Image 1 (cartoon, rainbow, N blue to C red):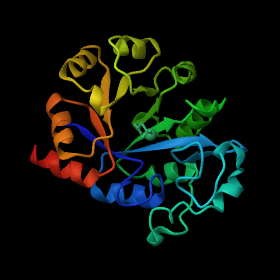
Image 2: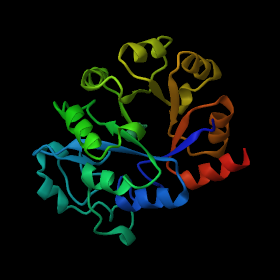
Image 3: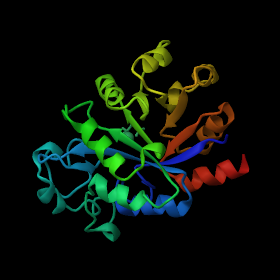
Length: 242
Ligand code: G3P
Ligand code: CA
């Protein structure tokens, strides 16, 4: 099976990350899936943004957890990237699920609960995925082991992944014990031994963030299940030539 290409925060080199513009572009480029990040507003609405704070990618400042959904809607999430995208909003998870529902795309939703403890993020996101009947093509990933436990408790059949930046010889068994069925690793941790070990244990191995052609080719060569890239069009071009 060839390596799947997930657009990391959408086609985030060509459009502002985690916006409908970036997701639409990734789909037009032919990505197999889309990776995105989810936080909770003060009134418990799941919204798509990478950072805990709005400063880097919007016209305002403050933590997502302190904004109501209505307040967040007033922020401009496109101008920081280019004036061409002025007026784009931070979108709720529901808008993304509604959009992706009739498209042949996989979803990787990263639960951003490793720095802020959003108590019920897991159950809220899980509920929305069930609502749109998308469980079979969704992967929920997190850096937070406790979150994997919670997901496992909700439903053992959820596709889950442990995210890591750290090398560790017990990574695969640690992920298994947490009920994950894949590991999502930083590119510098990649090696053939780890890929083979994951596959031997029926675990997936997906790699982030892979933007350079040389890195892409290496991921394809060692048999990674997927890569996360900011440039899905480039990755597809190189996969076609591989
Ligand atoms: O899910 C892979 C990758 O997105 C994790 O790191 O910081 O880009 O969310 P980050
Ligand atoms: Ca992410």
